[in-house]
Image (tube, rainbow, N blue to C red):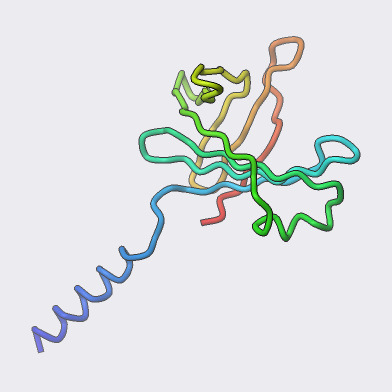
Length: 130
């Protein structure tokens, strides 16, 4: 009986570990301009590097098929300063700092952007999809 319980316990414990991605993936989609619909994902890795994928569409009704199209891929890293993360992207061997600030939670990635007065305005809400 003890062997059976131990076997079941180990099986359920190990089955929960296999096949799961530890890197959270966040999704956002919305119109950027009247004629440009954007779908964007951000995958945050444990070392605070990230992979951002961006798909562009002319019409909102096409966005559910975003996985069928080749995205524009950008890589970079995040640095924490205070309660915000700052994104730095690698462009042609140089690092470019974005003005956007990021707040991470278990269910969302909130992207803020400073307006002309220097106040932070919520720019996008990415929802965790994995």
